[in-house]
Image (cartoon, rainbow, N blue to C red):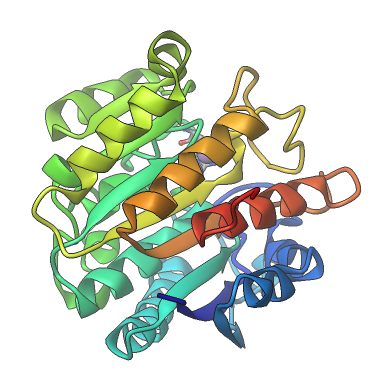
Length: 299
Ligand SMILES: NC(=[NH2+])NCCC[C@H](N)C(=O)O
Ligand SMILES: [Mn+2]
Ligand SMILES: [Mn+2]
């Protein structure tokens, strides 16, 4: 069945320290996201961008939770917009912006549809809290927040928590986890496939497990795609690159397997930073991946 897709841009860069990621939604649109999806037979509506304050007009009040107030307010808006689309049976594609944006998108998806699994593609775990964060950047926290772990203003976005259950959460591609973040991950009970498992078992085995775990007993799966999951040689335009990532081919295979499992109901595309990119390469990788996720095949 051809999907009705709604694109929502969230030019948020307050969750991390490098300017430019606020231009991610433009870069991804410029890489012809809409045209690509239309060619696949999707009915696409671009809803434009959610309003986001600029860092220059704000003040950091809390060194371990930078721009907390602003991010909470943006998250509530994003949650409302995403929930409205989900309730109309649309497939939302939410364009970041840094990954703190997912606090709002996951809240919106689950508000509309309480029982959802999550596949989190990322070099990082994004499982920090104000106690463990080395940077104070909220983009290192959204997965913990969605599980109900962290500052109550963040976990309480959209008025309920937790948004998701650890038994249906799978992290894929991890290779940079902070010392104390590790303890939170272990205690949480989520499933983690690091680059070690991808190297050893292959992406095919990892994804069939990930799909099985994320989709067990839920009504849909949210894919949160952080472009830094990919190797920086192929996706250089990200703020926190880590060597030794997922290759372009492995990424395609993962997306194709998700497409044929037909259980993804919403997706985030985050951390694309065109200022750090080379000829919009990272945005083009993102659009290629979304194409495969929504059914593009070679033959
Ligand atoms: N979404 C991301 N790129 N997150 C990077 C997080 C980096 C580091 N773990 C931190 O907490 O600051
Ligand atoms: Mn991330
Ligand atoms: Mn990351």
